Length: 322
Image (cartoon, rainbow, N blue to C red; front, side, top):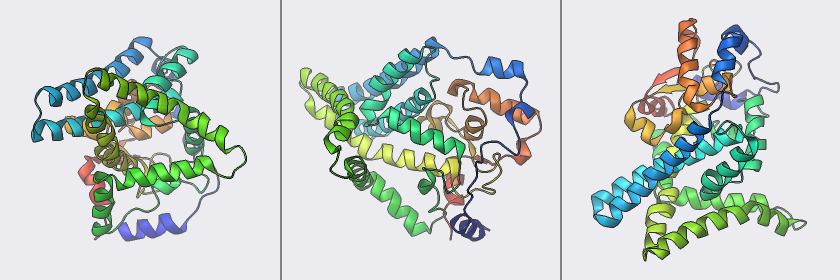
């Protein structure tokens, strides 16, 4: 069955939009529910950004004050998970969901989520909106993340090793640089536009570490997790969201919701990103209300029609063919 799904995904292309045409959100939620779900909160926005950074800072301090192999590994794992969390909050900001004010939303998201993670939110926003409109079609700019799967076990192991050794990160950054640089015309301006913010944000992080006499912590507790555990977590999250899907044309089956526990939420699925069908159904709903959307879908009897998996280990097995 997995081989059939793999063949189907790699040989079929869909040219039209798959953005909830066969079934509409208005068929599922009432106007009152929709209005309540879409409300944004500045308090939530500050809390989520503060939550991510406080966990990162606490993990850095844990290793700084109790340096040993166990605190090192623990902190690298936890920080990698919160770095994915920052990417998720950047994603929220790209949807203008993190704060009520668009100006506040964009400025705080850029400074505290996008730039530290070497992301240009404006460029991401343009690509990501196309992903929502053309999910898992040949017009989906993020389709390349999902089409290789399922893969053989040895291929999956190689991917994981490339993530954890930093090879995937280096390749990704080189590829990003080449894509931005493009042809010579306008190259300098494009590079300045993309990299000025990330360089500034990461220089400030380095400056803070240096001011405390521990510049090494910037490398060990920021760059290293970004290049290793964060790469693994973001790969698994990407696989879970749209790879090896039962029906690319059905919006309830071309995205996946993954039910997980505390460990999963700390690593692969921070800030409710695991409710991915729900996010595609109502992309104007803040992440902290996606679980409510999930319960509404179940209450309305859509559970059997949805692509729901329990746990990320199950998702990895689904995407690894024998």
